[in-house]
Image 1 (cartoon, each protein chain N blue to C red):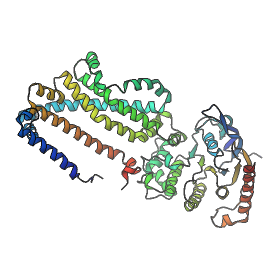
Image 2: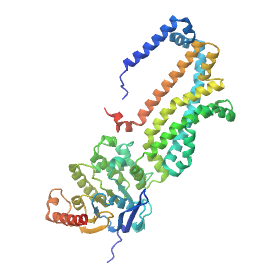
Image 3: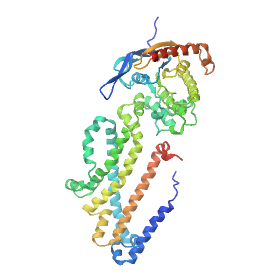
Image 4: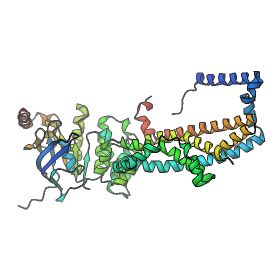
Length: 258
Length: 262
């Protein structure tokens, strides 16, 4: 299943760009001050003091991310199923959703600071807020796209509304839910790091900004590399889980064709 | 004579649909018929005559505009617990995220949430519809005919007293269709379930049924009731070649043609 061939050409482009960066920052000291050679940034990752500090910030960021993401998923999937299924409930919330959704989520960080202070609660809260939207909207969409026949099947087998939601609507909408979860994964990371930059104290976002302000540019890049890797690894884990859980869906669609 | 009440009674059933422009159309009008315990009854009518609407009303999935449906004397005002509908579009009705076994287990669980031997029961039904060995397959891995067998096994797992079938073999090829018809008659004989079968295929209706109700064009009403006295077990070759079979077919065809000429 996971025998995707390695994209040699794509990797080569990436390596070429890295090399270009390395060579240009080594050849021009002016440029090198702001854009240190990537090999320096990588090397600093392996300096014990930097690594230890980064690791503790990574743990903080990861903790906030996981808490926010999981809470958002639980709330948004639950609410999305109900709003997708009950037309009346949806019409009650429709205007609210349409008004709040397009607003850049980082705009509520100041509000959250006022209401919740500058601790973990606030950072988790803005993460929940921001990444709930794609999950909510995709779940609503998923439930609304369920074929009438599928719901009628549940009804003719004597299932009540809530049981239909749980045993039919939820699994039938699962591919849409998964899309929402996938979209909100990087959003969660954006909100965690941004709020860490704003309120400071700990976390990778804070570390990156702090290094920049202390003019430790190489260390700043080391922090960016760690955040980037975190995003990459989380996405890979997500894709692997998704493939496992929606095996039935892949098989019945174009994507799953051999 | 002390005859038992029919298991299914439909009286004066009408359904009017409201449309977007404020107009409304009458899909079925004043339909009445009965089905006796253990009987195999077919409703035959042209495409688009409102057969599905009628069956949805009988299944309690939509409310009729007038008239009543009663199962074992109890008026239907929601899906009754002793009746289940098999849809024509098996690919939309089967649970794509469940295996064959999982789909049939759903039927068992819907009847009795805590059945101890649920899996044994599901496996027995899968065997009865001839799908032994496919328990772990997903619906999309099976052919259309096999998928409809899964849907039938799932419905039977619910142990309905009345099985409603809405053109269940309408979207499979002709050969498969004959196989499925014989399979259904076999199941009916073994399980003694009452079956109300809807089709647009006159020969299929005669081949399967004890009685056939002929429906006219939209708004549809019952135009004829025919009793089929062909010997059972029926056989795709000899029964369909029987002179009585052809007489019935012509009779029903004439009535249906009269209707469309009007």
